Image 1: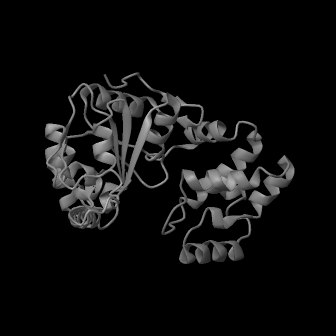
Image 2: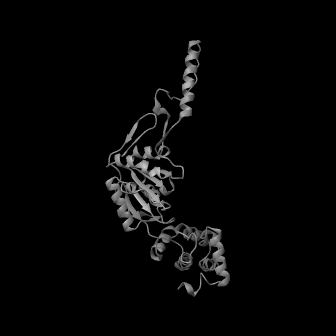
Image 3: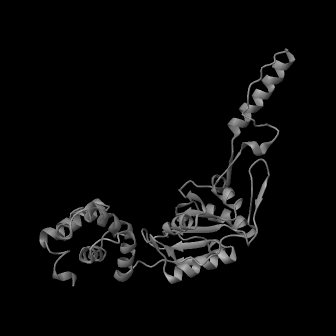
Length: 303
């Protein structure tokens, strides 16, 4: 039976009530959880922290523009199969000549096709009920990738290439599957219909303070408050890529190396701006705003 404990987060991960409920429902129903939201809102972190916190095996498939279901499920090693077949022929010839020594295939048998199938994250997760499978950034995949997953999600099974071996799992034993999307492209309706859906809103200041506290419990409140003022102001000035939770955590990791007073001074100088701003046009825009008004991001306008 798969793990269906109602999970509300860990020491390092804040899982709000709505997300915890959606994740629990997905595992109870044996369905994938599809999480959408802008980058940096903790979509990928959920299965990583869940698996670590619960001591479960984790299988990760980072999706790319050339991803295929074959790569996701399993690969048949044609090169190794052909080489081993040739070795078997050579061994037969050596035996005919009365030679005792044999060339090794590493214990593989060309007549057993399963010996040449390397299971991917999907097949490994389906073979292990009490595990976690992350399909990360599925919106980067070609259109056919989510469509090709429909059969596996509906029937809860994969067919291994060449060998025809079936990896099948019951609804009760489905691994915890989390699929993330940044909505770079819309996913097929039929695919979304096979999932439990949740959208992660960007955290407000109150939630962000709790997230920061989980990561840096010893950081001074004054430092956090000043940093968040700057951070949320940056998110409002129309940047190409607004800073995300990941960025403020990285920035504070650098800032907190200093004592409280010095840390606040660094924030007010926007020291370490490269941790927050990730494009040259955005950097130029912020620098122009600072030249016009040095207090643009740290002065009274923030209140």
